[in-house]
Image (cartoon, rainbow over all chains, first blue to last red; front, side):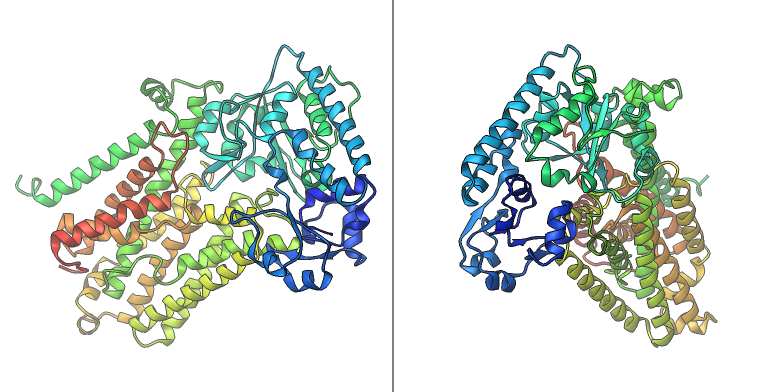
Length: 282
Length: 349
């Protein structure tokens, strides 16, 4: 199969069925070590780079099925021209963390390990629910906000988004939880300052390839130093390149949740080793 | 006494008051509805604790943004005036020689190309700092300016140079298009956002550099008042009066180009102010004397930029509109209004 979305690899690797993947996309951005090796060894072919499909390679490969992320027009026209069987993979539309994980069941069916994928999903769901009910008991919920500004606009996760749900499940209050949007939306920087200026925590996820700390954050935009979470050194940071967060996170939301709980309420989970997120050290 | 109340002085005083009013309004009004008294307490230095969001919003966000709007508006207006006089063409504006396209190309190389080379989304990955963007835009813009100046030495007349400049803009645009075609959607979105312009990119600590560059350019322009007036009379006439036309033209070009480069570097491409303000000022002051026009476009340009910035961040929306869109939305009707009123557009009276 051609698994063009990076979120499809994690479940297949976990189910030990990664050998069914013959084609991927954007190999320059792969964070997973195993997938990187497969591409390097030529066992998996890169079918799209810089946002452009290599239709000829795809037609030579003739995968039994193409799993792709739909664009606003539905099926991207170049893919349609191949005439090959396709399944749209809009997993990122799921705002429920476990809902996103559940897509692994389809991968299980497609790769012939349906039973195993159900078992795996159930164990993840159980662990997630356990952690969630653990965090539900907290009496003090810290306030958290997320992401950064660019060119005057600050895109924040919507109040009904995936991130908002995880913050809530982890025992925190997301600043924009009242918002009705499922997607990210832009706000003026001063709106963020007014609403999140004295929030307790600030979550940043990005794929930095070098030293990243408070000095780097401030050098990006001086206004960041005005946030209490910055001054108190309460930035929750995820280096998505080192942790393969965007590839593995949707598969293992219980680990994302555990990381957050360990930051928000350290007494609830003792001895937790951060997987994706941790407090950025001063 | 008669001198003080002549129409020019009244207009200058009115423009100055308007500028002051808009400057103040930009500090008091924004997406966040801050109480009037609180802003006043912050401005008068009576709020000093870090706990109040008002002090951060006003001092760290609105103040640098407002000053940036003034610097950008006045610089672009002066650059636009110089270009219109240089080419004796009412449609000339600071971007006409491809200098802002050069800035776009510099930013595209940084945001779109370098990301693919090292396999990372430049913006999502956070390795593109504000300084990096400013630097890339400035390098791109000055590279085009250098090319234009070099062509200016070779080409015999200014119209050929204008055509060469437009061609350079096309080439830069095409290269940007290729970079956009082959880039990740996150980087593409960042590039689009940069292209919409913003007065909030300049932090307080960077403001002095921006101001210094811009004021230097404007002071240079003020030194050119007499030759600029002579240029309006035509190249032959100016040459007869002992002006080295070619040298003056190149000097004017470099000043206008430098002003455009520095504003684009710090605020992104801001459209229309450079085109609309000289017409507005000529219409208000009824003059083509650069001794009056340059101060006039500085005042009018600052006010228009402040007005656009105010419109872009009206309270009650939580979000702000892109500055570039607002300047065009307001600038275009202004130019039409001037044409309708005057039935004609002038570069000289």
